[in-house]
Length: 411
Ligand code: NAD
Image (tube, rainbow, N blue to C red):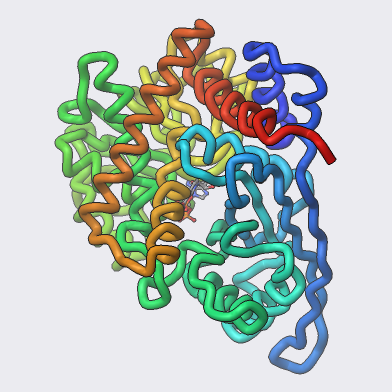
């Protein structure tokens, strides 16, 4: 099932549980605005090349729309649509005053030089600058984009609208980025995991963790779990997988990865088959790489007690059912990986205030938001007798529906 079908299915289940009026349900599903633009740039050799850029603005009932911009060859309107919708529910679950959006350009960033990427980003910004803004739609980095991409977007946008640091988040610190943003998603994953484990009288200390993906999110989650005395017993990335039943030394593994470019042949562990990672016995499994990795082929072999969805859509709906029947507790993506957008919100607040927070304040506020959101999800689970995924969806959808109703429908 593709991302749009899975997200819409979860939304519809939540709408049914909440007893939403069918007309409101339909209005919440249809995106506020879908933008598709042609982006033509001269390549370094002087030839012209054209790409298609998208921005889907899903909903703005609770505030400016918020979401990443990805550069990837498989960016397609359906997926951007699903991810924009997911951002609407995610920002509502985190209780930050935003709606949802997502965008992207269908390109292979690795095939473009730095100056080609800059030209492409500036052309895209020129095409959409009238439709984004500090109080309208605030882009951020996503797959294939980074702080530099946001710096170019900010610069191009400012040519039309004057200095506007809060128009994008995930910026370099020198241009108004927030301290703590780089680690925020992984840190949020760990705060969410701690809140979940506390419900069962447990903490990270002494438990075993397996992490798929060792990029920004996975490596930060691993570092912070290791710091708290959790045993990260297996880790994988695109280069392979490594395990140690007594716990990997994550700081050393990060150094090894930096120096060799690979997780393989690490002194403090043994290489393992990457296909075994998701079914390796552990207390907590944290998929932090790709969507759809837990599916009907492998779900019944999963041996974790808890799954924390750091990646977007790691569990497809069939796997969700199989795992729930096995009694595996799943902390859903719309909550578990909300730390990034929450610190993006802090960045926006700091830009609007013209005042920079220290990293301790950023991390403390992040913990407060993640812990509060977890308790709000649990309350929905109790009220509607549902699992954490439906607890999160009902929480998010209900907040957006309430805001929509309060605004009214008069033209
Ligand atoms: P990243 O590109 O930094 O890291 C991705 C990691 O996945 C890399 O280590 C890569 O080697 C690994 N990977 C790729 N294919 C793999 C495979 N087949 N098997 C095992 N590992 C594989 O990306 P990221 O920013 O860490 O994002 C990871 C996930 O988290 C994505 O699903 C993303 O949408 C989601 N997410 C990220 C953020 C954020 O702030 N970065 C926020 C919310 C959600």
